[in-house]
Length: 262
Image 1 (tube, rainbow, N blue to C red):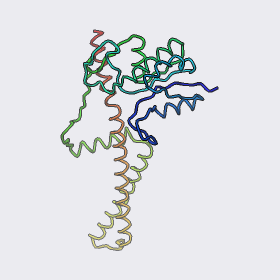
Image 2 (image 1 turned 120 degrees about the vertical axis):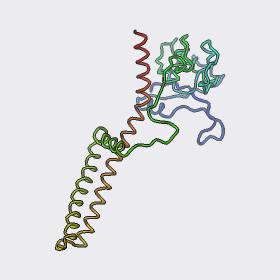
Image 3 (image 1 turned 180 degrees about the horizontal axis):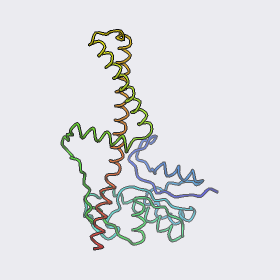
Image 4 (image 1 turned 135 degrees about the vertical axis):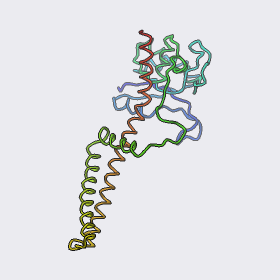
């Protein structure tokens, strides 16, 4: 028989195919369990469920607690002191705490994710910091200006583009950019030679078709260079945006730990 994993459901105001409020759980959790050979069962967060929690856990093989809103601070002996608290639902709290306590008592595996870790902590008698930033004073800063127009000189933009191409581009970016550079250089030299011939009056090599081909190749080269540089620059921005919060938070926490050690 396939292992049965209990997932506490969520009271949802709507769901596709249901004409009224629904009980739901994350589809990806169920799919992950299915890929591992198990079957996910959603436990309805209803007051009537509490009377059957022990029998449900006894029949199941494991419990998965997933993410969601915050726990009611009164459940760990506090009153709400932060405006950052959100999504408190008494039915969710009651059923999840009962499930995890029953699972622990019966020595059943529990996988706690995000909010689930908080539920597990409170079920074991722990407390929570309602808003971590208010507690450890982590300052998340940004070096760029926010909320106003930022201007860069042409030299700064060029330096950023070159740095992006060198440090943040992949092989495809290099191929596109270098191809554009080669096309632009060769066609530019060709057009310069034709212009020189025209100016000095020697028009043996001045040909309308060749001139048109040279202009098309020049424009294509410039376009390829722009595509290569812009994609590399966009890649750099993407990676920096992803890393910025983690970098600043880790930097500030590191400073705090260093001050504590000193």
